[in-house]
Image (tube, rainbow, N blue to C red):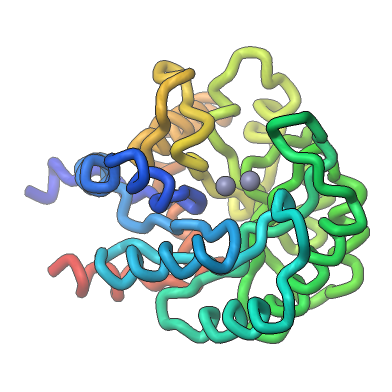
Length: 273
Ligand SMILES: [Zn+2]
Ligand SMILES: [Zn+2]
């Protein structure tokens, strides 16, 4: 049995609620277990979505959740919503505040939320993370400098740059700031030169992997609905870029993710046993 068990993987960022909406929850969980994905962080986009992710985490071993307020939300959370997010973060399976951040890629149909609204949301969420001593899962689309600027207000807050989209120099800046960078399926896209270079160069203890499922399916499943099990393709590509064995990258990124998220391997073994 043991020999056939794949090396562990952690999907640090996925949206199980969106997969559930598409009728794919059971397939997603079974496929993940078969592929060796021991931990899935199912990420909240707003208060209601965070609650739905909490319910999934309560029902399924190995599934954890984050509570957050996405930069695409049209307004910052009001006082009552903020209190509820605050209460959600006391849950034993709430491992992070997210997703939160800034998105300066404005397109009709994608989002059109002004920067000042996004900044107000982001600041409230960073304060929550500081209060709870939890990591943040940061959404950064074309906002590298603006995000580092916001983070400078809360030097104690650490976390993960989800779906990392910068180059080696930016990865180093994030690592110096105390963040890990998370590689998604984009690292398998041939035209993602800067991101692929960052995946090769970033310090070994400072990166993790994710799917952002149902989005961003990696090669060879590009264009399809993404699933947590495909984090294996991303780990394999990062291993290839770094000249490492795939199992070493799986073990390394799983250990880094568990450290940042505060999820012990023992806890999971116990749950599985
Ligand atoms: Zn995102
Ligand atoms: Zn996401």
